[in-house]
Length: 60
Image (cartoon, rainbow, N blue to C red; front, side, top):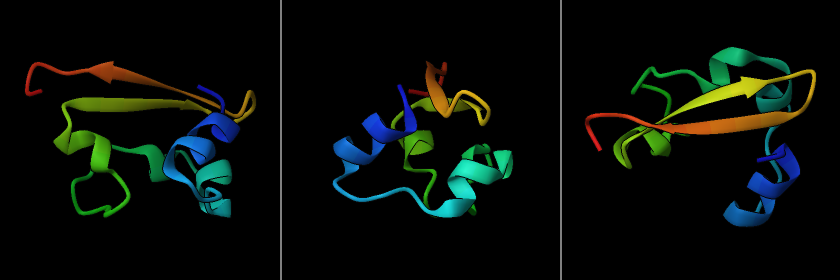
């Protein structure tokens, strides 16, 4: 998904840190934005392309 598509799905603009820092998309459950972890996904972001891929994990 593009970052713009993610914004449409969540109904809000992504913060600047999501566009500039890979850590925002990380797998640290302490990051409150990482709701995809609880849904059984990991995020792999490409900041240059402004895209993210959500990958299903065994936990989900």
